[in-house]
Length: 396
Image (cartoon, rainbow, N blue to C red; front, top):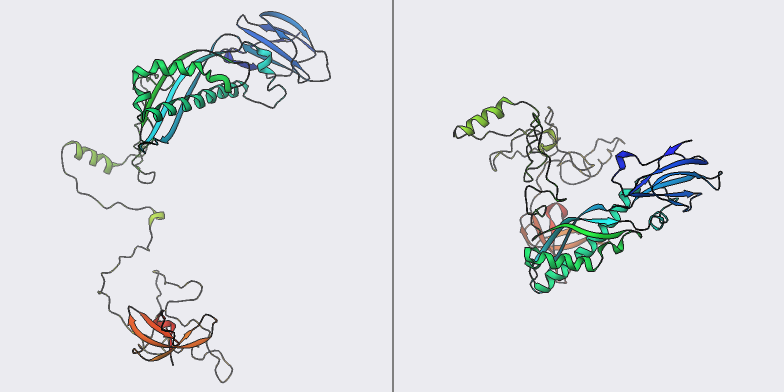
């Protein structure tokens, strides 16, 4: 006859679900500090105590589940962070509280009845997470109220206030919002820290104790830990430590000996280059060459590429299609009055020009002044003026 029992790997789990199919009858082995809840046909059945039991299902046509529930206290850890503004002073406050507590299951049947038949893979983790979230919600409300009433985070970070905080937290029963069938036994420890939210994380006091209260494991013989990564460095600019670099080694030796190193140019990666490796000339150093009227735009050639307009062609090329020649060809002059690369003649103030109107038709306007490549035009006799680029007007 098959025997089912708790796995030693899950000896400290509050709830251990038997992961294999159970036949119509089996032998159940239960330890002294646990109970086994048998669930035939997705319903809560017998609750077996310590010892060995011969169990037979009342409905062999349906599957059976078995849950091993610890009746001894189980430690649950929590870590909460909340941020708010003090109403009276407007000071931002960020609180972090971490610690642990012990819970116990007095009624295994009530606890298992809440999730029996549901497709849960990690039942124990879900129950402990529910307890942690309940404690964190209650603790966040309690600490926020104390800081707001005192208008200072010292009301919760002062070590002398810790006994009263724990007493009030236990009085509210912080596990009341968790799953049913789990009761609070005692608080293990509680650590509270506060800042204004400008740092990436609130650092808890005590460097030799982690947030769960356990002393961190020391490295074994020959084991080394990687150096801590500075949060001020970006991912792209962080140096690679797994590749040997003589240049980096030389720089480290020079820095160690007190030598002042000369800054070198940092070679950028391909995705950081925003220009095709060309140096920008100084303003005014490049002479402006005006091509003759009707001359084709100069060919750029080479591997430097050419600057293209969005969907049209080279900058300075005629926008409209070429007008057909009298013989029916398509090699006539451009539809615009300005050849490629030609600088348009400026219109003197007081002259009449044509400018496109809101309806797309050309309308007459008077030039008032020319300023930085824009005409100030008065359309009609309304007295109101508009600013239009030089290339947007046509002499009347």
